[in-house]
Image (cartoon, rainbow, N blue to C red; front, top):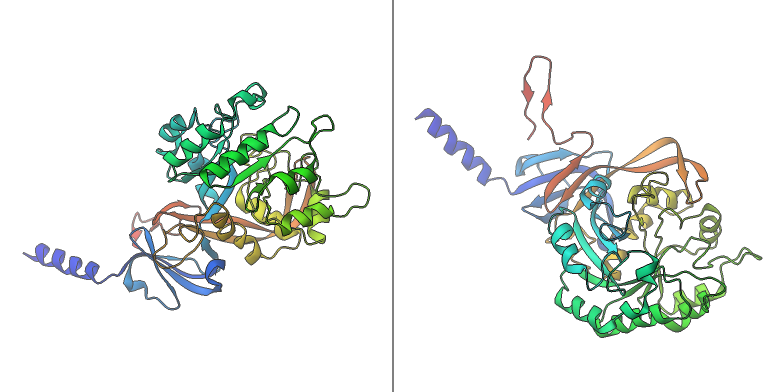
Length: 407
């Protein structure tokens, strides 16, 4: 009888607890709602319930002290590789530990291979996986496929998008090494048929019959995205003689073309990024182009990319904007993603700003020494803690073999 009474007493206490998880005392940065202050974030089920000051720990089943840390919406990586491409990485192994709750696979699958992608990766991953489908039907399988204009079918691509709008958010064209504009033209045609944006990663060589100015001003539409913006081969951002941002870059931005970081193993160079940032040409979105090579030397996960942009003068608040709400808007998933608004899916990144001396490497393996870096310490995905670097949500153990229960 005594045990039964205690059970009902405990059940009654739980019924009085409004929230399942409370992140208490962190600096909340939610650009979508213009929030940048110390506050508490309460989660009920898999939704953000409330962002407010002074929420009582007794109101939550579990409370995690995040004082001294930064609390943001789950980061959105607009350019990652999790399928098809030879360097693809399973997203849960690389993204959740970086506070990245949403990744957009940039071109790994085409209309021929998308169903396989959906079954093998998207359905298995805890990470939210969205897709920029390749205009090449076979996807990103190397030059033999990516140079095959006969496999670039706008109608089949658009139809696959219409059948899978829950996860396909745009089109990617990449690595086309042939002459002319066929790859971009067909990607844009598919984009028009399906009413989605296009991301372009294009080889610009002297014998290609293409140039960056014409690409940005004559082919890409407002809302289309050019990735790898701080590389020196495919986009020609900086005039090599004057050191100035090319005038047509400003013109393209003015007409609504969007520029994405797309760090990767070959597409972020300190000389280009430094000159562009000094002139105010900043990324619209911060993304990683994370794959089997870039994860090793460049270590280009989202906190690493944010840290590099901050070292070039971008504020933390601005970097979070370009890692949450901006990419969500680019793929038309805002306000579903990129915010801590009440009712939004409870995807949260808890970050630390570390001080010291850190080496940040670019695509050519040149390093810059910086005194601050951003690091993920805890990730909430769909209302559940999925990564906890410091065990903040864990009960304490002592040498007496007893546990201290933390609510």
